Amino acid sequence: AQSVTQPDIHITVSEGASLELRCNYSYGATPYLFWYVQSPGQGLQLLLKYFSGDTLVQGIKGFEAEFKRSQSSFNLRKPSVHWSDAAEYFCAVGRRTTDSWGKLQFGAGTQVVVTP
Amino acid sequence: EAQVTQNPRYLITVTGKKLTVTCSQNMNHEYMSWYRQDPGLGLRQIYYSMNVEVTDKGDVPEGYKVSRKEKRNFPLILESPSPNQTSLYFCASSPRQGLAGQNLQYFGPGTRLTVT
Image 1 (tube, each protein chain N blue to C red):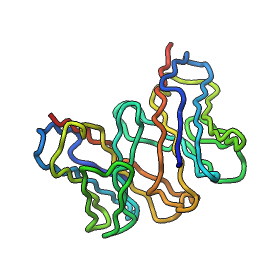
Image 2 (tube, one colour):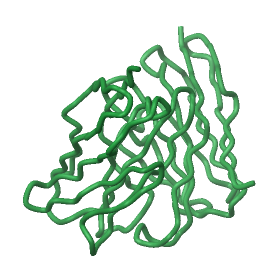
Image 3 (tube, one colour):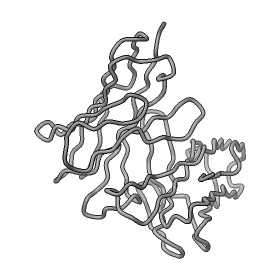
Image 4 (cartoon, rainbow over the protein chains, first blue to last red):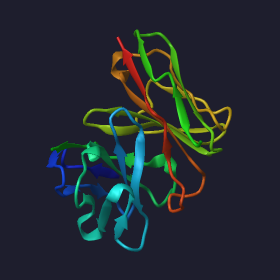
């Protein structure tokens, strides 16, 4: 069965330090991969997505993610975090067979706290 | 402005009292979905709709109903709410085109429901 795992429930990082959020998926083929951010009291905003091609994907707000097929991972990174990056981050997968937004599956989320 | 709206944003109700949460999008999107978000569980899909009069169950449909009589609206109905339906609910919409396109999934701001 298709699944998405975000191993870290909570991460604390200092402002200016680098950030890496982990995402692992279990699926028979390479799925579509997404990272979303949810700021406090807000809906979800798409940061970036991977469909094919270059395995290093650039997104908004200075984020990037790298798809590693051998590890079934799609980790999100930012070289230098800002206080405004404090939020909850969700990894999601979509099935290529249905190619449908209607069947996205989300991970449980990682809460990021940024300290001064 | 392209947006997904949900009403109400906050609702406290009692067990068994029927309620409806409305969702409306102004982007002429074919796909619409309802998710619930619970701590530690991320977002789980309740129902989705691929077009008018076409709906299907997501991962956690029990206790919910939906309808899609018009393209822009996708209300979520709780016929007899129970405390385990206390959650944060998100509506989302996206165009018919596949996940690999330039299109995005747009989320509403969320509805926080408490059932006592």
